[in-house]
Length: 314
Image (cartoon, rainbow, N blue to C red):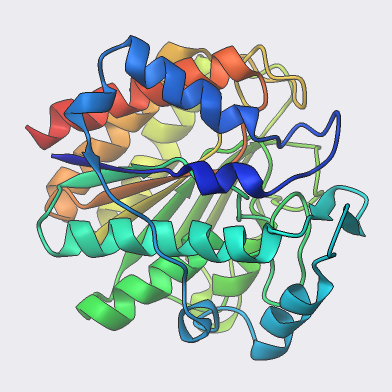
């Protein structure tokens, strides 16, 4: 089966009027999955709050304590011009991480073959000790470390197709040869990182692959990157578990970027990644929601990916 993690409690992280990373994103996804009769075909996994020990697989305790202390009793506190905390944000962020870990546990235990986590807040901009870009904890990075610790796996692939470069994930693993981070993203664009020459450091040199694409790039550019750069890298690395930082803001309708992908483009990318997971990782693939801010485009693209995940799990 395909696992699915989401929860009404994720709506309690508030970001203020007009903020693109808003609760309605998840509600649009839920509605689309129900309309396409996908909702009842999924294995619904209940999220749990991540423990402090799990959060500190990636983040220092001082940072975890800082976020907990920073939440306001009422209203919003802004960590940076993009990133807000409301009264429930710390607990919701713990639940986001824990939801991803619950999905990882289910895949490792054979409860499901793959899974999609429709969670918020997103995570790939969160660095070890710095929240930014709507992100508080780095959900995918914590999941990678969790899988390594709990299953003894040595080679984890993170493919990030969000339109923005996942600076946090890159920085966390840039000296680590056991986690291969691959990102396709619009460049130049926030946060300004992700140049092709950023390939990792020290023992991790060669285990970061950035594919910056110019504004206006469409599916043809992504297909070329997959064929010429990503697929050969994945084959050499032979990952034992595959994580997707699944942002959908490269869609042509998204208001925060200028790429030209469609719902079918995301379907195709997901199918390719699932093929790699089947070949190298016994089908173990976990997709985690990052960006995507046009509600209809987001919902349709997530549903297309889940359709592919369900097909792969049969």
